[in-house]
Length: 419
Ligand SMILES: Cc1ncc(COP(=O)(O)O)c(C=O)c1O
Image (cartoon, rainbow, N blue to C red):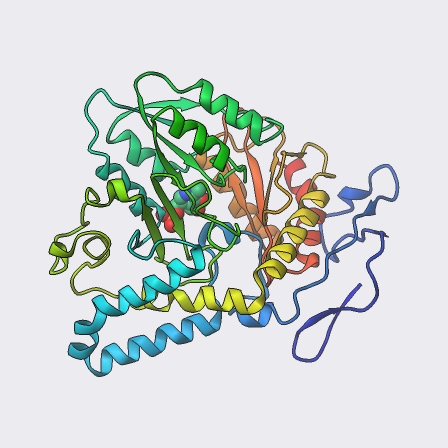
């Protein structure tokens, strides 16, 4: 039972206990009650003051933090202060930008456990993938191994530069070791590089584990890790030290959109191209890779504020809260006829379930279902396409409360049945 206190902070009014799920008032019906009363798992406690840190609309259940993140108000305010500085004295601001970026980069590196000279700010994971792949200087016969869980724009970046081999990883593979063995079995003598997700976007699977990266290094294959979801989600995002790793700060790191980093092992740093030749070009990586002449750098300069906030809130507390909420939501959804939970890492703040066969087979079908869920249930989720039938992914974040997942679960069964 949760009650809303003055000021809007949600507090639990009584201890967690199993209870009978009530359908959402005005919702489409008691999907979860077919066959009699169903007890739900205990709802996790809301994160005190969490929703108030963001400007998100209370009309919408934002259960999709994993796609674009959400910026806390204090981070936006820090960014606005930087914009005011730039507007007040552009010359002074822009002359100082390269050194201020170096300082901000150092703070980000400390948060991530990275070498400050070995990471560069980049706009997003997609841009990082393109820079990393260019640094490989691939030849026409070189082959890159990717998985069928790989993110579309990142896989396309590889496909533009080399031949691809795609390892199919059944979303129902039971554990990380099964994933590891499947990837290793797909390495061929022509594989020069492997580009894998640390946490996959559609299926929330942990793929590029330190053990798999070590096995690939033993085979002398260059490793590129798409860690888009790792900063903020994983305690040691660079674990396994791949040759290239990139992560978005704007997802789980509370940074403004367009903030990401590319980490490069010493062996490849000199080969990372600058996206555009700038006055920092002669400085080499990382300055040459991150400086883009006159541009808006306020997001990158404010990015450490997001990570600082995360530390102030307590990383372990935030992670435990987020994963408990995502797990709670997945448990509720798994009771809807036709939805099947996929194997999950309990520590993560994302969970994926398979939709009934035949649903969301293509990107267009997935987008249509996503928008229908948003319009009819007021819930934002990721619907991912997959051959034969796609799935749904939900996330947990400190602004979420259990009732949002209950609302989704109460309405989704009827919505799917009516399609
Ligand atoms: C695993 C993964 N890689 C890459 C991306 C692309 O991120 P961006 O749009 O910031 O380039 C995403 C976005 O959700 C993702 O989930």
